[in-house]
Length: 475
Image (tube, rainbow, N blue to C red; front, side):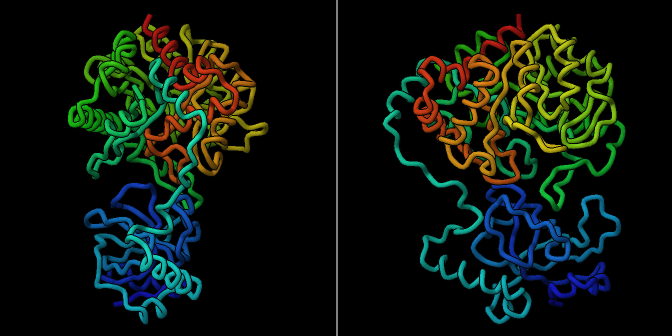
């Protein structure tokens, strides 16, 4: 049967729980992957990848039988098993499971099942699609290409002169376990990116995207669950490295050799939840998976400490978190305190004997409660250890490369040019990115030069500073 959105809005859809239904709506993808296994189906067309619908009366969760291609320029007609949710931790009311395409959507069906606003959007989108090359004309567009710069030649020289490093990356769709890998090495070669800190994600099985686009933990993990997940995740990262013949950096000499050897990876983990208070697992990850960069927390307060996006429960860094930092210092693993609260960072700075990294954030004069941005004082604590802060490029914060360069300059004004880098969060953002390909690196270098940085300073910002921290950590 065809289920109209009016029944989603008024709750009459409850009576279809467990039934096979058909629905028409707009795909609201959770990321920019070419194919989507999980997404939202919305009553109204969305304007961009970052605009996930937040009203449970106007959207439902979809779990596809097999990943479906992005459909930004047309509504979807799906069939699947309808499920009613009760007290869902993420706030959603309905799901369509085992979803797969039904037949093409007739215009009369669009008018019948979608809202007037959705019908008007459908007409506009389909008209645009008829005049285009068949590529999506709505959500997939993202930031526009920027005009060539007079600094392009100098930017290429800067990139050729030293090692370039992304402090935080999920490139290649490494964290999407059900997806094929996407190109990493070609992008890095074209953009002169030498090394990326390739991060697996520790807490994915227990987190969800909320209607307000925040990521939150919705349950506690089962004993050993995240440890097992980490093993699968590190194995997938290794498969990506081998499939694309990326280098694996395990010491400073390999890092410095990367520009000549070719694109390379530093193995990282976003969150240390898989330790489960068993500190010997750090040694295991160091030896077995070549872990060299460990972020203590992610999207759930864990055994190591509190996070920026949830109310504190530990008062900052725990004693176990302090012990992990000391173990990382001994082993030569970079300690990343991204996502950690200001109190966590202050204690981490007091504990560590090596520089800290805050891999992906940006500066705010007054960070909002539960915000991922940081204050000047927060930044100065990291810099005080000799560390580096990676500037993060969501399009909602920085609309183009020039704005991103100015954001890096603002952080430099606070902590100095020795303590700032780039943390792209490549393929990890829930919305569009101003830096969504390593082919963008020359444009960013040109924007930094245009902002007033010298070639030597630009080289520090785009990799030299992290290389110094990596060497100091290994010493």
